Length: 425
Ligand code: AMP
Image 1: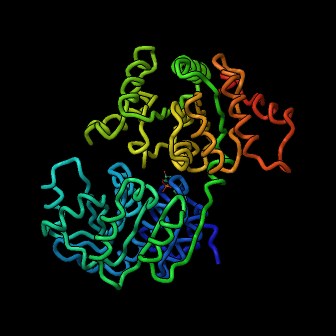
Image 2 (image 1 turned 135 degrees about the vertical axis):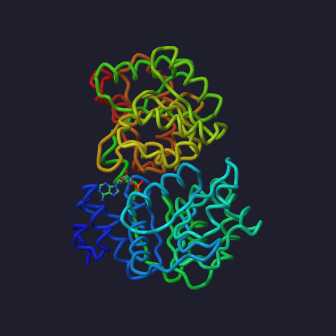
Image 3 (image 1 turned 180 degrees about the vertical axis):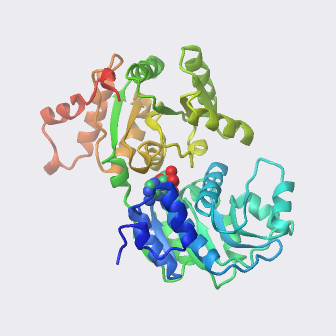
């Protein structure tokens, strides 16, 4: 049985109260599927990305259990452990627990690197109900004897695909080895590659599978466009786009993705000089700098945020109306994550990707992964037909003969006029 309203779910009164205050009436598909399973105490293997409401899908059942069974956490221990790949995601998840658990008497804390460890050690002294942690720093503190994982009742691995991309596999395995056998485990990943499924099955016990396919979050709600452009013309094209966005008085925020930290800094500086206030976030920025930049972005003081992939994980800002891939990502999954920064929580959004000659290979991988061609936008001032043609030739040489479209159709696909910049939202 799936509940179509939160009121129909057997969640404790303090949670129902906060959901009413937040005006969440309808559980998202992942919440509809996952919450009843988790309330039964079963393990879960969830295929879902951020923006689908997955945080509440695990935070609500955990808070429900803490409310129903309020035993005191032991010193240096936690009752629920959530592992997140980045500080930003950890902060986001911690904030969600605080929001949803507003009326539940529970203690929570965060553990992540890049900041002094003493406040984290102190916070763990008395024990906490919920610990949200990044694997590296958590293991450091465990090894120093400041954290004890033997009392974990709920174990959540969030964004496992990203965790593995970032090289955390060994750390995750070490952490799992320290957990008690009797526990409820939840595992979330945006993709389920064979190595991820293998890891899941080594951690979960007879899990229920729940899958929210990325296609529904990417293809349906996000207006995706592709610009074939020379490397040197990317800057003027970006400015053209931002100008049309400003002219349309949309008041929406824009995230621009850059492949490198240096590129992100340079872009933010140039955009600011050109009259588009921008900030950059990336791995070389301190935690305080990143938080400040995010805060200014959310308030609309710097409506353009230039980010690298790692830094943008967990950025959850509802008003992001436009995502620009200034550089295409070299991992196709990152494309799905990036464009998922827009169209959050049911809003619709637009994602424009720039592709230069050097990036055609990345584009082919992305289109293979999302199983559709990204509609080309050919009427902007910097369109480069020679790059579009090379892409067409590459695409047709990969198409099996029986499925080959006629040359006319291929051309048509790439010259489809989607939206002029002036028509921006
Ligand atoms: P997440 O996928 O957990 O990052 O959530 C994406 C956004 O959706 C967050 O801003 C949540 O606050 C919001 N959200 C989660 N569940 C619901 C819901 N059932 N109704 C409305 N908004 C929600």
